[in-house]
Image (spheres, rainbow, N blue to C red):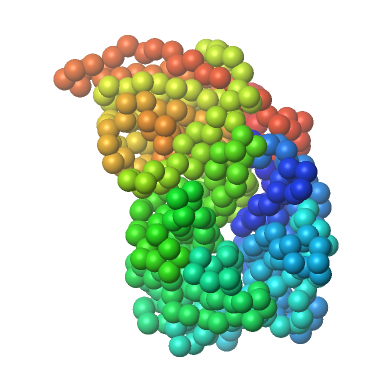
Amino acid sequence: MRYAPPGLCLNDFALLRDEDGTYVVLHLQGPWTAEFDHLRMETSYGRATSTDLVRWQPQGTAFGNGLPGRFDEQAVWTMHPFRHGDFRGRPGMAMFYTGVCGLTPGGWPVQSVGLAYSDRTDGTGWRRHGTRPVVEADPRWYRTGERMGWRDPFVVRDDASDGWVMVVCASDASLPVEVSGCVALATSDDLEHWTVHPPLISPGDVDELECPVLERLDDGSWLLLGSIGQTRGFEAWTAPRLRGPWTRRGPLGPTGSYAPRVIAAPDGARVVLHTTPRRVGLTDTGDRCRGMLAQPKLLVTPTDAAPRLEWWPGLNTWLGEETDHPTPHAVGDIGITGRVEITLRADSPGGDRPALAVGCDGKNLWATGLDGIRLGETVLTEPAATLRILTIGEYVEVYADGVFVLSTLSYSGHPAPWTAVAEEGEGAIGRERAVPVRPIRLPDPDRDDASAIWPGPSPR
């Protein structure tokens, strides 16, 4: 239910679907490491395929750096491939991607956007369009030197013409650099010649607004998703038309969730996939590092409320029958009426000291590790009546009243029967009760490399 290429990490990615219904993910890839070098460690795109968006099969590298002296000679970053049926009269694809050619005097990556074509629809066979970028930052509106941004392109058909619209992660030159993160706008009639415009969205309180995604909804309105910095989750905006006005809808994915992409699942539902980090050395004290692709979430877009992510029912086929036995990878549901703490792991096999727990006292929701150390927390808009908790390896997700609201990492503890303790009036501690869980069937249980799902500490 999570994926990274064998022995490597996975970062920003793109999704597409081939003619036969096979899903393809193209993704940045690099080694697990504490020190991230963005000029040497993300120099190619990995490719994997799936029939269900859950079990992914690695298919090797699909794209890499350009030749020396070109705008993409040092690194290739986030991409957006999409179906383009007019390529030499045959069905094919166009792909816009970020190229990096070096560093500014202050050590900032020099970024621009390039174009490649393929006469295939499976994410392979890419041929670059020329030797230069097709879209660069315009200094009238965007930083082009130190702390520049011009990456993560996403292209859709214009809803006001026969042309195309591109959104790009950029830095608003009119704002202080620490709050200059914005979504840039460019337009084109032919995909190869672009006109840059002032920002589409410039919140004024974001350092970097990365991996923008545009999705046209069933009523013709638009949804824009953007990652806030590198670790602070992603937010949503909506608009009746591409040119706006755009309304900020707030967080959609919690802290740790990053680089969302939207696609139709096999059951026809609109789902979001995103990345999740790991920690260096697979320990709670390790620094966060590039991570993995998490399982799909159902995207719900009500007309009178903010978008939200919910549990996707397509995952239920990967769940076993309910049990109260210890299991390392599981999903459990619990109804709550007051403060409650659910223990998921113990500090030793058969032990009774909590090593991983989730707590809630109405609007406040948190996860703790050994000795009660806070691993993650959030404040809900309304008190929760039910919680769904997922643990798979070190990864923990929490859904409050069906909505995805918290994720964290925990490398401590051993599987234990899930138990809940609730306060019973006037702060009195209630009786411990069992929480039945449904074990998760792993798509690739026998993998044994740096990308395998963490199995938990040794029982010794």
